Length: 391
Length: 223
Image (cartoon, rainbow over all chains, first blue to last red; front, side, top):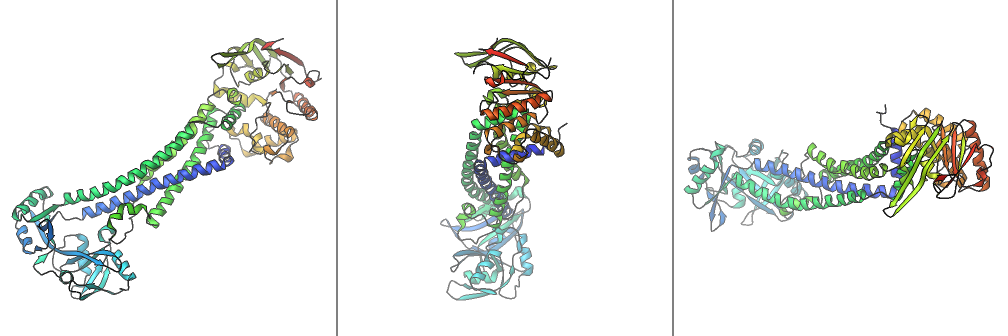
């Protein structure tokens, strides 16, 4: 019985790879680079999918905006009460928010106002409401905002420039504690009163109204009723927003798909090259081994080890490098393909998403295929009569 | 009888228009412990006989029996096992792997057996001493002289202590001194009781005392 791993065969395989060190090194580097690229693409895609899913989950069921001439205007707060009267509506909250452009850093912050005694339309805001000091002019920041304003002098407070040119000082009361960075990274939360002051909004106006519906199946019906009640409004459901997000993601995924296809194409060129045959030297060696008593399966085992060593080493190196590149270095260049559309947003860190399926997919796309490409031509030679190979 | 070739014909089909009859209905018997020299010009079929005995190829017709094994009927894997256990083949061009060391080349036939390291060491030391190449153990084969390479090839052929030694044109690449040295090795092997078949056209072998028989072959036919 020869069931144990034959260490001499493994040693021979390693020797064989070392004998062709430049060829081995070249193939290992190319394979590693391809696996690195594929892994990076998958890791970024997974992380961004996770981010987008979190964002979509936190979206309001219905958002109502006032539209005039195709443009978005502030809406009357009283509209919320009218919507609340519609059957099936669980809550209607007038939101006060806007984008504040911080010229020094060249980024936009999302400034969101909340009321102390109002039901918050998002769980994350309920937590923030508990920590925010409504009696003082205070704010809670997303980690990205905190970083940027800290880098630009402001450590304990920030001066907002109001539309009339005067300053509004707001103290930093804390930082968001959340793992969904796309959602909260560029957000500043403060009292509605402060937001109105910064954006010069009157008290009876709001940016939009978010509506919660008791029964999810009734969202479309409620949206229709709102539209009928206020024909000058734009009523956006969660599904509409999901589609918009998905469209952006799909468009970006297309670019990634192109990279993915190029990687696979290059990989299969290597495979094709390997499958197209062995050198006369390699054929002769197989003939010699058979002539001195090696079986076909001994030759194939040895070739399996060769293929496994190269492909598994490349797989591990490629995946580890990709993990480092995506999650430590924040995927320079590649991440910009996805987030490039939001240059004005604060930068964010891709959340670490450990997905065994992805790792398995990359493994099966690389290791077994490469091993097969190593074994098949050797099997063709080994299956010939040893005499024929040596001659 | 150690080796029996019965009505052996071997035809090589180089291409559709070029069919070569290497052996034409030959019969040959070799007894255990015998040293037989196959004499003939290049292309006469000497190497083909060795190749058939070693089960490196199959005859087109006829039967080869070695001891009790019908080697001409063996499947590919059993033919490999047969070679490993019974045959030591010294090729004309040695067929060593140049980038491996002497030691690595010699133990190559043992690699698939997955033996204990101690057992491999014992077998290795035995042949290194027998063929006086202990001091070359770790040198790369490509750095050895022709004579030294041949000793490595013979050591590899003997590492499994086979009963049969087949040597194809063993002195073709050696000068006279080294050829005589090879004959000394043959003497030792014969003294160990091995059955030896040497295919050669080197006249040095034809009148040697240790040679039991010289079999002449011409254009695939035994004379």
